[in-house]
Image 1 (spheres, rainbow, N blue to C red):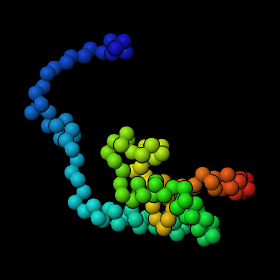
Image 2: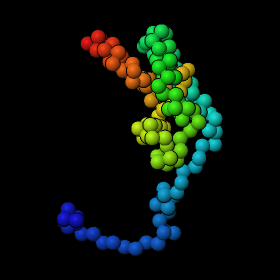
Image 3: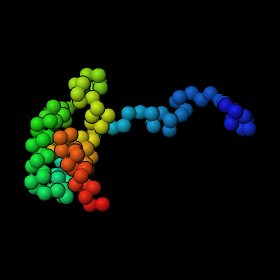
Image 4: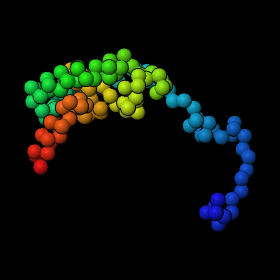
Length: 134
């Protein structure tokens, strides 16, 4: 409020029907007309990321196996969809609720955007491999 004291401000009431720009910007945006097209595009992008991973086929298979063993509930939740409310989500999956829109499953791997989600049993090994390059 103190910062505004140096300005000479006049507040004037204007009925909503006269505020055309504000009215249109506050409306819900139109939904996509072709959700299948955007889903197909996303699937293609995810598949491309998997194909270009800088890890061996053998290591990918290990990650897939560990993912199936440790993260099967998360994988299922991603595939069937998330509940509207965070509180309705399984307790062990709540840590993923904030990033749920970025999670996808392809070829047995879970991706967060362009990053492969590494199961906890493999994290130490993967960190060591990353640090070998430094």
